[in-house]
Image 1 (cartoon, helix red, strand yellow):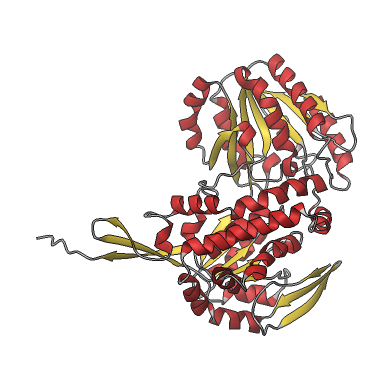
Image 2: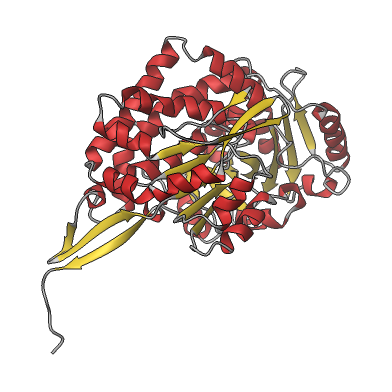
Length: 484
């Protein structure tokens, strides 16, 4: 497959490389430096475009994507991404349907309104926030985004926010989703002849893949005049990138969106309503999202928890008819070994009879049995566990707090920083009682269980409003109030 950059610059030097089955055209150091020299003028041009026009152009990108998807134009792309990401075509279909929401006018507006005091107009002019006091938000760029490869959506979010806030934006997608990300943003080029805003946004975006040993990648991180480096992913790449950014004499901000996971908390009273929600969140992206529930806590009796697990298994059978699992090679033997070891530890095991949909539900009492087998089966890590969940049954609701706090310390979650999302299916009284305690566990999101995978436009990303990090504030006061 050919991996080529997306840009609008007439003269650009490319280096041709081969990695496996990929033929990569990578932007050279010379060309990156030339592009970055134009950063100020590119950002000043974009700053002259009213924010409403920038948002309208991005909204059109989403509409074009929706029309092209409906017409079958991207059927080839679905096949390509299914092969490169390992997700089933049915999951890729779901992801394609979500792309327009990233670019939807109302969603971008709401995100910006929640990110900036005085509202999004401060991105275009000084806005009054107090009597005689004004804020103006200027781009922090150039912005360099190193995105993750678990789906197309994650790269679109920071890139869209970087562009709409007026930054020259360099995006390095993963090799697995590069072709999809490029196809999304090609729509900006398609409408740039008839839209001044689309032209300015196109000129402000460079998408290029860089190999791990790329001299240009090292140059960008260690020497380039960047304002922000936004890294999405885990170690060891996260630490290596951080070391390089720390040595950059321009001192760019290093914004990390690291590896996180989700926990579901359920009680007997609301268990029946949690069955389909837990099953769906286990199937979507095969639990590889930062919000995906990879463990659950059931507050109640072992008998009721067992009934609940059996019902979730039936729901998994039903949902998976439409969304089959593409399990990693060699994973079946590891999974069977894990099931046998957990059964020996005294847990109850529910599993699929369908080899093409090998879901597993483990029910353990009071503490995790999964933790006890990790020394013997380290390859059964969180990144390789698909449609697998352990339900820990506890007598007291407050014990779920300790389980959530302990996630970063446990071998079963090695490589994950902590819990991002807690999905609740609790009685009203239990939810009220636990909410404030959950806020002190270090988590970033609390949602209803069935809603864990849904990101609303007003939400911060891992505790941060990314749009605000991609800008800096200029303060203006036009009245004097003497102290004496």
